[in-house]
Length: 358
Image (cartoon, rainbow, N blue to C red; front, side, top):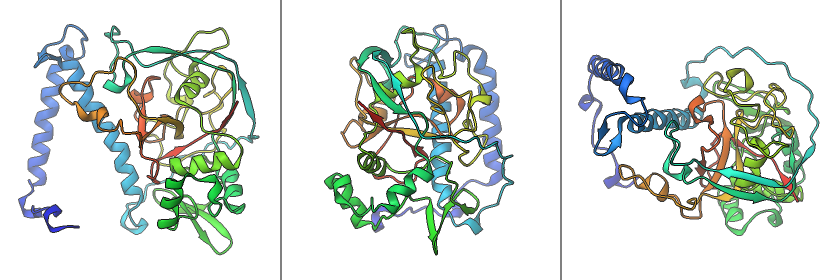
């Protein structure tokens, strides 16, 4: 690290634990006193023209986003430096068979309407618009570790034909031969979870970078879905309407692996009720899902004045949209308009994928 980039503060410069606790207590008291008005959308007081409800949601969601990305960093700490938690109760592993399901042609809504006063969204979620999606087929489940290991065994990381020029250069320069969470000891594969190493569970979703997901899809003779295809498969119905969640109109913690209830993935068939109208399973939770769509503004995009670079700084063609949720994604971010994004060579995001074919 260059000298100019090194932090100059020392532990002695930081506030004491007691000061931090007093500060947290004051802030929580102030927030509690203002919640009754701050969450009254449309009628709440404003700060510099912005409703307090919007600012509070920005603060809460941004904190929850960083709680998830902090987990990505904590995951890389040596296991012996962590206080090991007891594992969550295991879920019944239900046998799943890889299959592709047909999604009929139809229209899909992307984004939020600015007229929806009761809803909060980030600037990249606006403006709501419709897209026509031709018929396609999509994997019923996320690609599993067991499926991905076939790609590894078949020399997928050594075959340049499956990788873009930029992705191949990244793979070669960094000596990448397998997913970041995998480890090989002798002839056996293991996976690094948050608190321990386990024999690689073949029925867990694989977590990989966008570059690796794209290479697998090419090896399989398929592709990653576009954002519109993913949206259509998750929220569309056979009668042409759209629903708020793949399983229906009401949120439910019983439907998936999300909202901080677990640290690690669960078997792909663990939540059979988490099923879209077209039969696709597990589209919310248990890992974000990569799309082939570059992160870009929707028609009518307007950056918010109080945070103009939140999305616009990443409209560079070098970040890709991820949809769904991971085990460490807060429940408030399960809304169907939410868009996550990462650059294609970041290997530590809790993101998997499923493939599509025309």
